[in-house]
Length: 178
Image 1 (cartoon, one colour):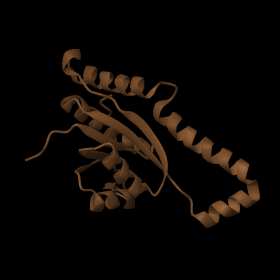
Image 2 (spheres, helix red, strand yellow):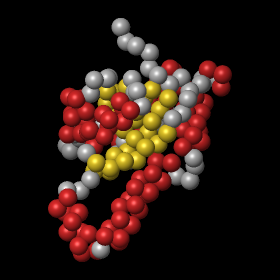
Image 3 (cartoon, rainbow, N blue to C red):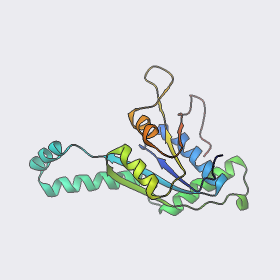
Image 4 (cartoon, rainbow, N blue to C red):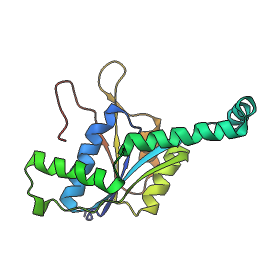
């Protein structure tokens, strides 16, 4: 029997392909009145490359660049809005678009997490940390035609102890729910 969903981790690489996955995650959050964690993992560059870059740029300049990239990813996810306002706004729009009244459109927002390191391990670690019942990820458009899943999704599918939903990108002509 499938258990009730109380918490979802939406893992995104910030690409267009993730919009349908967010729409799906928003609908599940709304349906189950669950919490949602928006997660973006910045892949850490190998130590040898980081050492070379620090040597060329200086340690302080390198730290500034790293901080800028983390801030940029966070701003891409939330813009200038607070985490709670962003999630509430997106979910309210979803409810309006699908015709769910305000009283039925309950949910509890959680937060936006931007971290760095090994992507697969961090997705699974954050899912465990936030007691997620579901991980939602977006597939990408295939090189020649159909949809494609990459090494990250395959790794999460192999290692996850909870359900993982992989949502295909919108086909041409299809649009977002939100």
